Length: 126
Image (cartoon, rainbow, N blue to C red):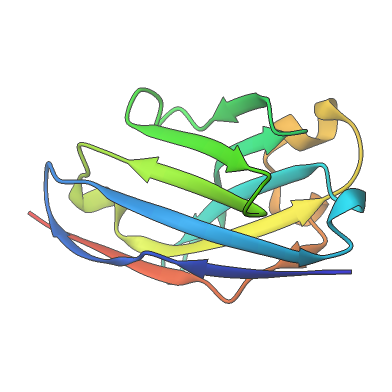
């Protein structure tokens, strides 16, 4: 089991940027896929980006070219750099982790992820 703690959320004007952090602790060796998801009330949780064994990445279509996921193994931290933010990016952002292969990781499906953080709120004012 692993523990995930997100930070870095806040309020920002449209066009601005934020960097979210997810500190992973516990049995991290067993979790080679870490992802960022987001959710607004009344909607399903959306897979924003994932990183697999600290290298391979994939993104949702709505954030491609604006968001970047990276991993710093020395800090056991996964980052989500968000730029050119839009009002529709407003959501609670969650970090999640799983073990397994790239095929499943890359699907970015909530149901496939085993461990979750508590979330950090991002609000973009237009």
